[in-house]
Length: 220
Image (cartoon, rainbow, N blue to C red; front, side, top):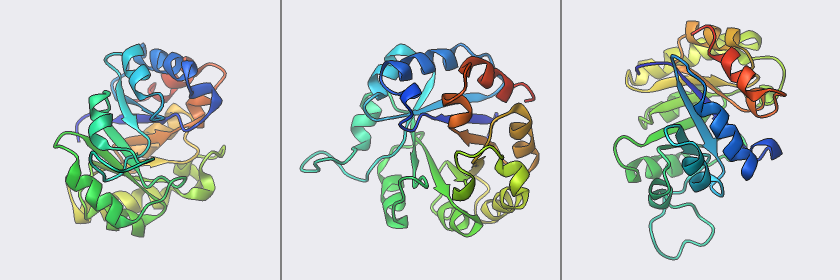
């Protein structure tokens, strides 16, 4: 899967919405790292963030398998791509969808558009990897937003997911999230067989997001 990857999910944190989202993206774009840094932003902020931080990879937090037409309130992948998105999260613990939704979305997006399907556990990760998204991210829901990284609290779910996904498809990258805060957490995640991490509050709620990001990539 090439270099390691750090995906920062802006969620709807006040510190990463509107103008603050643009500022956060600018901070990310200034970090020199031997890893891919990706901002996953609100649909409202997508175009502005892409404009504010050219060169930074920007993903959506969610997309729907719909086209142009009568789809009030749904998020059309074609519009996201036109506005500069290069990928999306799907099935996050905070926005669950059916496996059919994920499958239809994967059928719809063009080649080269990254789709990171989130899973709560190894079994869900195995099922999602059969659809061949770009990444599967395992995030035990009880650890999301907490102070203890999944790499310490439940390393077996990380290594087990990496193994399960590779059994199904060698081409799918594995990420882990929930409580990831430090460079040690990231290096542990990679040692456990992942391509990188998906995190949010460790950066978006940090007093100094730039320093937090620098620490996250410090051991890569």
